[in-house]
Figure 1 (tube, helix red, strand yellow):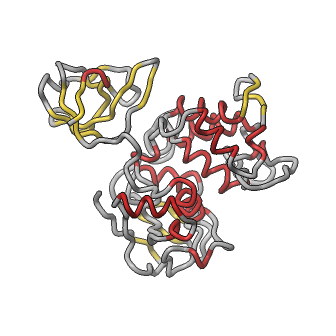
Figure 2: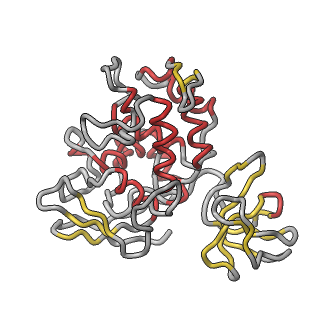
Length: 314
């Protein structure tokens, strides 16, 4: 995994960020709370693109089991989804993530980051209606005022940011793009290292920690923004920069295959040929009962999607 050196205007960085990829280290992270802070926080690289898009990391049953292990109220919550149909919270979360190709772990982290819904034992009037702060630019405005809408439209926003999808009008992500932490005085520019991190800063333009960053274990009571996201994700799900389960780097084509656009629905030419090797750029997703793999290939360096049954893992 390539390392990214962050550039932050008006903010002096502490020691260099490191990315842990060894499986032993990951096991230790999952094994103890103290190990959850074993890496150095890098404000320019919060989560990998593959982790952001790993929508199959948790089934509805997995989400429900996770909620059952938490002290928060979501384990027993039954409420309406974005369309008004009553469902358990776990189903609402799962369906939103499946629809918009977002990792359920990301959405669960957002629920804790925004409203402490994994751990809080009581609900205030607006807690569920502002579950992840989607469409809530201030205390008086809420574009998506229900738990179901927060999940669905929050995932939709994350899906579209930086990619020009779902009506998003923010600048497209590109190498060298920066975001501004508007909550720091003076404001700070963060030159983000990947698309997924850009999405998080567009959603919440806050670093949320003080320099020197380190592992942030000494700042737990004062963290906010994306530093808080990083800490929560590590605590519950391990390294946000590690490859997600089932992720492979390359596949070989079983037969001639059609390369699809990002929506896995529009054909693009030329396509990989039988026996050709393509680079996998993210985890498998499911669309309308079929599995697709995001890939890049010599004929299409910008990448696209290939049907899972057209490929063979190397």
